[in-house]
Image 1 (tube, rainbow, N blue to C red):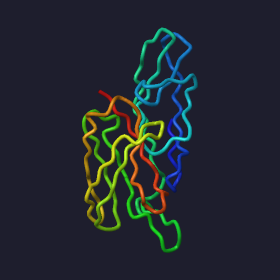
Image 2: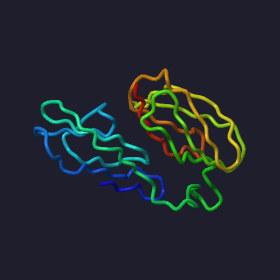
Image 3: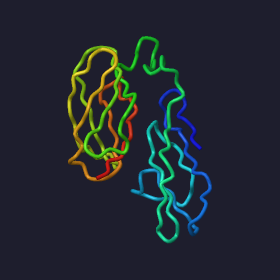
Length: 176
């Protein structure tokens, strides 16, 4: 069961894993391809993204449930969020794929105008891991980043300096 993020790019998405059949209880649940597990089957406060769900029983047997995709309930025309009557966020990351990723991370980005933009990668503790600039055209852009040197884990990518820091970081998982 997936509850999408409300329009406005908040972090109120929900994933609830359906009851498990088989295995030996108690079960543990993961939303990040087995990097970390929790006892409860509900995951809340999620941002837009793909969550590779897994269930582990008390004997350590793993079951890959499926990817849960938390989307945004905004119509396409609202991807550029109005903050003040005359202020639009000039850049919005609309897609991060594949997720999980191994060697390369691809972004789909909408930009109000042509510009050079910094992209910053952070680990789950907020530590800056990577920072690269890319040239964006006005409108839709597809860009790629080499993430082969990153260790397995959960990361976030963000475009700093956009609309007074009100841009939403996007989550991805790096696997080997």
